[in-house]
Image (cartoon, rainbow, N blue to C red; front, side, top):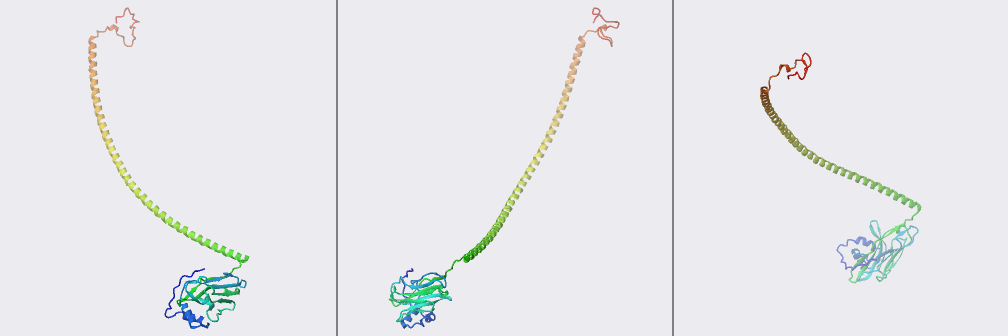
Length: 332
């Protein structure tokens, strides 16, 4: 249930822009001038929902469901209400609310209805006693739709209060049969496959887009890495060229040092050979002098030899020309 908030008395604006619509309802009612003024004023007042519209069943089977009722009442009236002026039930049709049944205060409180398919009853008294009921003996196609009810009241300050209910819906009840179940399953199956295909397409598009992004990112990264690598290679190449230049310089220096060393060794070798030759010549000369001196000394100390002691040429020691020489006869 919806509790009605405290409503302030409304002042009628000038111009009355809703007169044309309201007079359609008031033409059929034989009411006093005061009731007409109250209804006209109520048509211009937009108050919050306080009345309640109940339905016996929100889902019906056309031609089968019996005693479908709509009942409008006000269980929680706003303070300060003196009289109930009108109760009505409306249906949303052709983009506007149209009266289905309505009951207004008067000498003959009769319910005005727009269809012979329904039966109506209601009363206007105190707030707690006032109600309006609309009943279909058997649900028809006209039973289906969206409904709302209004309570139009007069306050103690002689102002008008219009209280609307929350709209309700009366829908067609769907009888579930094997054929309907099969159709529902097939429909859900088609919808499921369609959603799967759509999700598959979306997934493929996302994967393709992600692949393109990854490819672009990888190519960018690879290009960056190649640039860094080429720069590093160039730097290493420059360093290598410098190192090769240093190696060539060292090689040239070594070759120069080698040539200088060889020249030095050749010069020293020549000097050594010359010194050695001079030394050998000096040694030979000194040695020859020493030998000559020794030979001279030896010649001076040696006595003359006996000619007989000399061996003839071509003969062996101990033999003379005529035969062997005896030790006793030898003078040597």
